[in-house]
Amino acid sequence: MAYIKLTNEAELPGDGEAKEFELAGKTICVANLKGRIMAIDNVCLHMGGPLGQGFIEGNKLVCPWHGWEYDLGTGQVADDPEAKLALYPIKIENGEVLIEV
Image 1 (cartoon, one colour):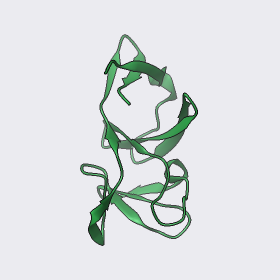
Image 2: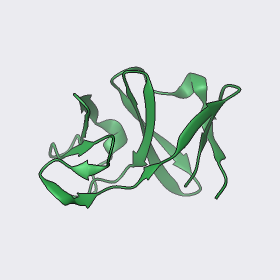
Image 3: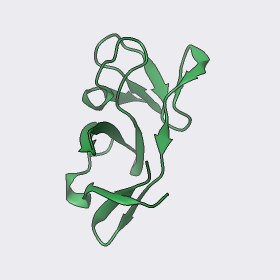
């Protein structure tokens, strides 16, 4: 698969923050963990909460609705290693944020 443009570098969330981006009818959560940019599915496996509206605690992305925690390195739910969200390769080139979905 090829990388496609998600946004501009200036639109990325600040350190310790998450943000939602729309891409071809799908919402992607982009998180900034100590300057490392990561992309993960935006929909919480619990009740569909918007993860891009959540917050980062340690290396976990926390859902704003019910506090489910996802490991940003693996996409796994903190309490259930079988449950995980998709992570997407992301890179920045010439000020553009590119993602492979």
